[in-house]
Length: 59
Image (cartoon, rainbow, N blue to C red; front, side, top):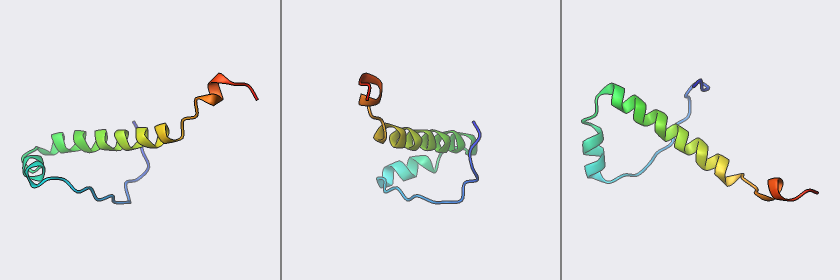
């Protein structure tokens, strides 16, 4: 999947144990995790804009 250049940062607070375990991941695992986080963020945005009436009722 292609994306725009990654130029913005978003900070997420996590438990210390989670950070400790994330630091153990290899670069490939971190890249996959970051991709999945971006997909999850995109889905949250998509879901927030979903309007079921658009598909259930004519105007």
